[in-house]
Length: 324
Ligand code: ADP
Ligand code: F6P
Image (cartoon, rainbow, N blue to C red; front, side):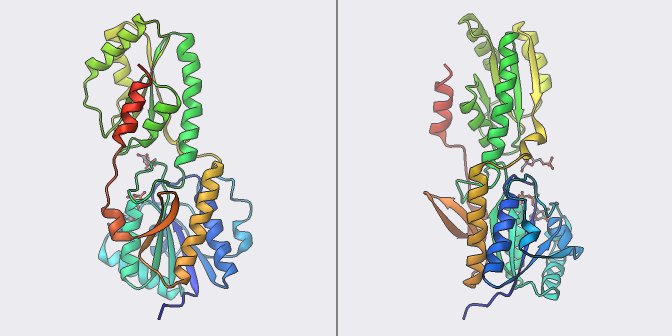
């Protein structure tokens, strides 16, 4: 018989992402609707180990759906990667009568969620990261807001770049994943997109394209560079020296992680939050919710974290073709 969950805990972990608050709101309100108790765990797994646990009710999540960040705060926690840390975390859950848990975060956070699940706490993961780098899902909470934020910022850089007939390197977030870079490359009509998954380090080829484009009359050359490649400032200096074209680097940084979530992030995060509670009510555990092939689905956590995801090659080729 399915375990009857009575008290649900919720935490956010890893990098924050716009829409996490919408997910928290949906989890709390769905749980209350189903007659369950809800506890918020502050600061991710670190807060769990410190017993930073608060009771939540419907008004705890009032006035947050439109806010970026996470009201529960977030953290990274080395101690929770150890077997002792995980055991302590599960014991603290039991002490607080938390028999169901929703973890909002990325792959690392899901690994932790899998451990909690194995220790008897029914746990569900929700994909929260601006990077879109979770393999089991085509959507992650925060990506839509982050790419829109980056796109708007890049439009602004483009205005000044064109006015001064400059080359601009704009660095977007994504240490290991180039999805933000690819999407901005498309949306901002960038002349070059440097992705951690694809960049071969051939700066001379980049320089040649800048020179060719200038000869063809292009007034600017926008290069979207992913954080994983980095070194935008030194790259700008080398490009300016080699081309004679004034070149500036702009690193967008953490502004991409903040701000009011887009409509899509509010809606999808809300649906995922509600579905996480429904799964717990069905006695399910060790699952991650994703959005795949046009519908919300759930996957085994271990299978989900073992899946791999790459930049779609056809999309990358189209992005390059469109700027020639
Ligand atoms: P993300 O969830 O965004 O991928 P991290 O990789 O930083 O972010 O992971 C967030 C937290 O999840 C870590 O600080 C750690 O507490 C926990 N975590 C990561 N990997 C594991 C693991 N293998 N086992 C248990 N907990 C983990
Ligand atoms: O995972 C989201 C992300 O914003 C990555 O794009 C980036 O590499 C990383 O987090 C930055 O983390 P921190 O906030 O620790 O600098």
